[in-house]
Image (cartoon, rainbow, N blue to C red):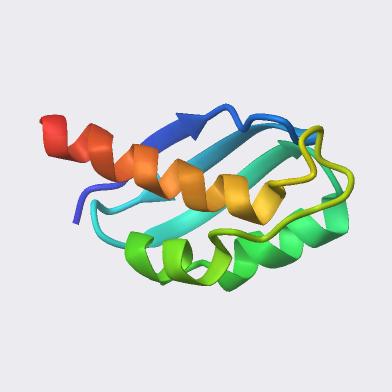
Length: 92
């Protein structure tokens, strides 16, 4: 299976970029630039091998008081990244 990379710029959180390596169906690796390093590294390892929809279901709607709107979080933005990733694949 082919490895592809998708870059996402999260909104209203401390992290600045999410670099997602995937095979078109499952996540192979995630690197988060900025944000709470330990937490993002932990979340990124836990999502390896998961489908985009599994990550959306697990992480969507998580809120962090440190986010600018208080209505999102780095995990919630990772779920948003999966939505955007799926949309980008659908266009091809």
